[in-house]
Image (cartoon, rainbow, N blue to C red; front, side):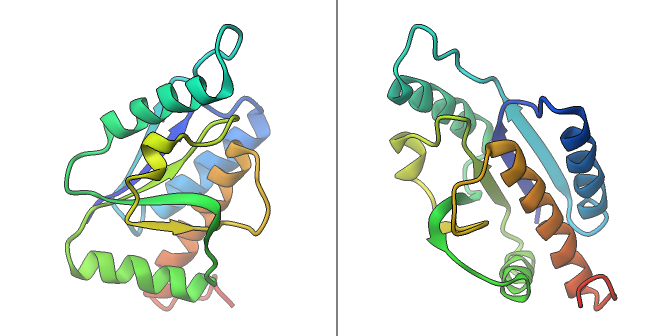
Length: 154
């Protein structure tokens, strides 16, 4: 099983980028992790819907066919860390690749919303996409420690 994190854009804030890298590095000790960053679409000459569609198409192009797509969406299923860890462990047992998708500043378009196998909420409120990526990276790391019964998760 491979875990892919597919996101729009790169973190702009240096401290946030460092925290994301730290947790993605930690998570990669437990899961074969690939991070895919696609280009943000300029909104200057487009509507939000066009931006979301183009960014969504870029995301989907980078996700291999047969991969289980999980959309990070505030309207998705809420779960605690142990449940998230169990979900990942089940994917590992099935040898099923999984891609977690985080949209850009304008959100995620219908082209992606029509495709997910599952939607999960990283929080009950909308997070900036860079912060959502940090939360996801930390939870991937935490899920790995839970799976190995390590003391990080208390």
